[in-house]
Amino acid sequence: MKNLSKNFFILLAVLIILAAIFSYFTNPTKEKDEKIGINQLITYINNEEVEKIKIKNNIITTVLKNDETKISTKETGESFSDLIANYNIDTAKLNQIDIQVEDDPANSLFLGTILPFIIPFLLIAGFIWFMMSKVQGANNRAMSFGQASTKDAGKEDLKKKITFKNVAGAREAKEELLEIVEFLKSPKKFTALGAKIPKGVLLMGAPGTGKTLLARAVAGEANVPFFHISGSEFVEMFVGVGASRVRDLFNKAKKTSPCIVFIDEIDAVGRQRGAGLGGSHDEREQTLNQILVEMDGFDNETNVIVMAATNRPDVLDPALLRPGRFDRRVILDLPDINDREEILKIHASNKPFTSDVSLKKIAERTVGFSGADLENLLNEAAILTARKNKKKIEQQYIFDSVEKVILGPEKKSSIFSEKEKKVTAYHEAGHALVGHILPNTDPVQKISIISRGRAGGYTLSAPTEDKHLHSQSELFEQIAMIMGGHAAEKMIFGEVTTGPSNDLQRATSLAKKLITEYGMSDLLGPRTFGQKEEMIFLGKEIHERRDYSENTAQEIDKEINSLIKKAYNRAEEILKQNKEKLENIVSALLKKETLEREEFLKIVS
Image (cartoon, rainbow, N blue to C red; front, side):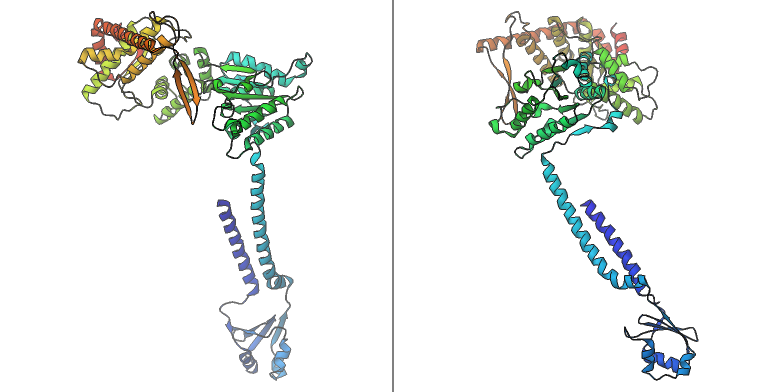
């Protein structure tokens, strides 16, 4: 509609200009010239008042001796001499007048006779052409409805190609994908030995770990075209569209071979068949069937690698994962501390930092962050620096951004009473002191009673090194640290508030895992209890199927209660033995509202 209105106004402007030009050439008379009849013209001639007469077409312009100009109109096709002869004017008086006859030029004939017929014809022809083009465009869109809307990284994009140098960490994944690069660069090297080119590579990992980036890096290393499409783009409300788009996608890939076809979020169409209401006639399952057929249609001469990404490999159909399809599986884990430092270096390359910024310390505080989280972290720090009107990013701004990403923005405008501030200070001091005293907990990095997100205050602790295995004592002490805030409130005020509700949920969940999943209960023994299953019926629902009796369920509840009570008693014991340190931490928090690690250690050491 926007283009249509724009074209209409352009056409209107052209018509106005043409009308002005046509009016100028067809009406050369001036508004100040007086129009007179033939009788008045004869009177002027008889009175010898006429100086000059100009005749052009049927317009007679009379110039009097007093320089006045009069306009008369004669009949079309009648000459001036015939007109004068009918009035018996004295010939001597006519001879005294300068009579000029102007010929009609060709452009005047065109503008006056031909153009009035051409303009309507052109307008009608233009309107018909415009309508036909719209109809043709609609037909083309209708015919292309079953074509895949792939995003092709062409030659221009390949100039800015991404290689493995742009991907930090994920060393094992890059080594695995280097084989794919060699297949694409020199396939004969492998086929000469009877090796078959892998058809499918499945990238599995948590969101933000760089699955799409790695796929682009493979295409950049091999210098081949890269077709990118999302799994959700295959499925439409019309039957057969998804399968049609799959066929179109693979036909394009075969024509531009060698190349890479990347299907992001393949679990949108690759879920296990027979799980929904539609049965085998479901549109999504038809699309999956077509993908399986197309992958079987590759031969050894077709250098097309199909890469796919998902963070839910457990829901994929087994037919997708069998040998000959997505038989190569590359797992991308969350980056460790060294990988996080390398990722931060890449994203920090185009940002100015002060000299005190240590990416190593930032990597230590960002346990569990993915590559996308780290990129967002530095971006938030840059935004915060710009809001502070600073030219370089400081270390403290990055630490503030870490807390913003984890918990949310600060709520300095929230008004808390002095009692609520005091309760929050004791609560957070209890967490920090218990975590500091216990030997197997993560070091406390920061304590704050400033509200962030849904938290009234927070205690930030992070390990100095990444851990992959956790012992029973570590998990127990973690529960004790979680219960430290609850114990501090109870010990100081004699009652608890609603503040520790989230702590109780975390402690209960961790205690249940310790008993039912990790087999760390002395009473129940080394076994697991319950099996989690995902049911897809009018949505997603995860439920636990019991594989134990009601008596065992009661024993599990008793063990959970006993474990939490034991952790609470341990936290309460530590707080009673170190009450003076607890009071010192609370005093500092009420005064400064925030304590960094160095300040906290000075108080408790």
